[in-house]
Length: 357
Image 1 (cartoon, rainbow, N blue to C red):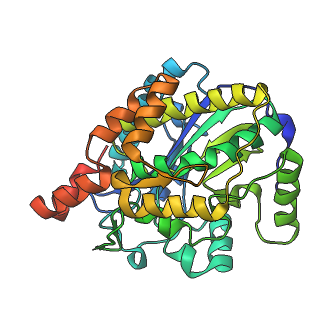
Image 2 (cartoon, one colour):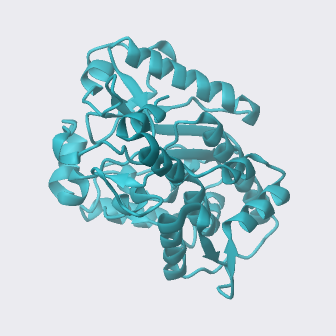
């Protein structure tokens, strides 16, 4: 059973983008397609070793190559997406993105047969059987393992505002949940999810990872599905909070901000800044606010003495870090708002069409 190593933390500032998508038919409804797209055909060269699937046969994942220069992120992401949509279309499929697909009925969809997923279904049962979620995972390279753990600890407070900004999953299993991100609530019903507690250093995280494997709690390090984690296989800090997005401009706004934030935290750690002490319960409350209210959420501040509106958070962070993508994301309607508006005005067919790449 696989665990990682601190030796992999050797490069700082690199970027990797993982996106989870839905395979859909011409009507935009999720259908099984991993057999044709992954197992029975050769993917385009750009997707070689960068194409995988998730729990359901209607879900597929791409990974970018390592991006050394942030200015290359847009071209790389667009090229990967184009290769995927071309590959899908050549086999009669299309690709859609959202945190949850509004037309997906999990009882009617087929699970993948990969042994890893069959073992998860057997161990976890109902919470995994219904897990039709799709997310955006962003990796930033860190060149020291202890620094990576310190950064992951500090990132925890920022996760709920980022979830609120990305909220794109109001519908689950055919009904309106009343939530901005139902994906986040569905996913955290699995074990080893949500915002983790603080780890003192890399050795503490490594001991935890090893203990979870040794006790049979997980089969490999990849089953620690926390909202942020030091990735002990890739040497990155991996932020796993956002809902999946069809609009690449929004994805790139998150990449821009998270890269700048990790670089800022790296410098603050090097300067000897003391870690922020945060209660897990307050972080969970902030996450609930993001899940429920999306762009309308406010958050308990790190000192636990006041709250900050999402708008103020966005303005502060964009000014502080010299980025502007998040401001553009906030000024638009959220994904959940747009989905509800479209469903009310034009119905499910139009909503499914809007989620296509």
